[in-house]
Image 1 (cartoon, rainbow, N blue to C red):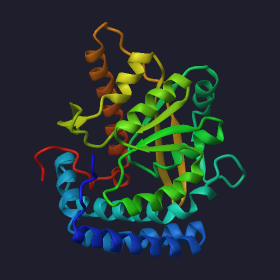
Image 2 (cartoon, rainbow, N blue to C red):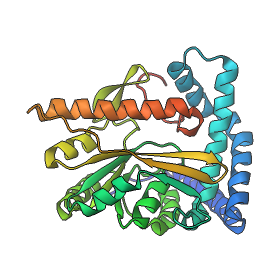
Image 3 (cartoon, rainbow, N blue to C red):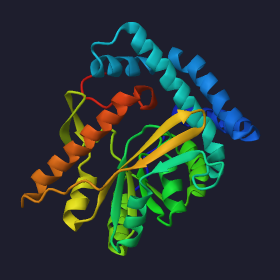
Image 4 (cartoon, rainbow, N blue to C red):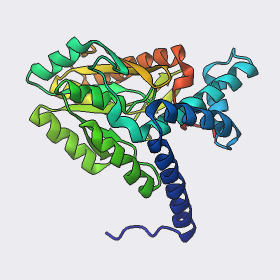
Length: 300
């Protein structure tokens, strides 16, 4: 089947986006990690709030936190952009993050669960959300001898995707863009006894409606379905930015797998548990979640 033709104007826009991001990465890469993260945060806080896409974050926050004042919303939007700016600036430095040495930048809680998953002889699934610096799950897992097979939503700009993927290659994980190939790769990984990494907090049109911040949101049931089908651990993992370019990664005990005999119902229950956990994390640190995503239907 022939690939769809990309409009010329879109090609131009993609090229401009790529060149701009590449220049930023060159700048950030020339600085130390701490200075790059600080500069990225400064630029994000200054530029992000005036971008048109910020309206989406404002609408989402007002829906999720109806009791907040306009000042609360404005402050969180600014801090969200600062956080996102830091993440962008940290990409050229991903290989520099240390979670084991005396100068470690990642505090890890729950390493016993990582070791248990590594040594139990079966596959497993890590689930998380777009909070903290979500790229760091892979680095920590690999440092404990547990390289992940990750599935991600590819950016609309293929040039940007390739650029970001170059930095991800240093994390010790395998990455597949969401699609048929990724689905096949997940099944093959499970059969080999490998471990998956899935960010399960974004809108998934082919998913199931699950309550999230009080409203139904289309959510992927895939992690829960795989865990129930193959009876393998489903493990929540949370990354929090503590200050600057320092983080905490918490590995939680595997979620209890329902076993009612109705796999579809069990997957819905397990997906709901995971979403409730994500919501609790986001409520604690709302400025560290990706409020720019179209998570709820009918909002835009």
